Image (cartoon, rainbow, N blue to C red; front, side, top):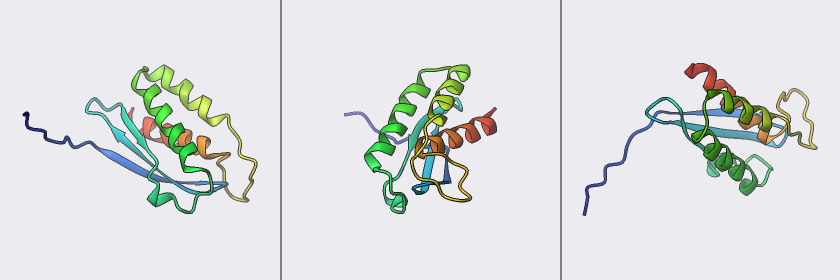
Length: 114
């Protein structure tokens, strides 16, 4: 049996307000500085009305796509996520949907990383 030693990865958790409530998005970075995983912790997002399975599936798909792209294609993924609108509107919230919130977090962390 081999020794398993968990690796430590740098991560950043960002609170993003959405029309459905607060969404906490954690971005885990790979050793090369790319995005390793996008996490939407269920326990921290109890005040978000969107279905957790829906939001987590968006995060999983974005993670899968971002692991397999270069910087230029990552921008296309962010753009695709930002095109979706929720039927709820809340005054003062500049995010259109939970997918848009994830795109804004990705955009922010990618600007900081470049």
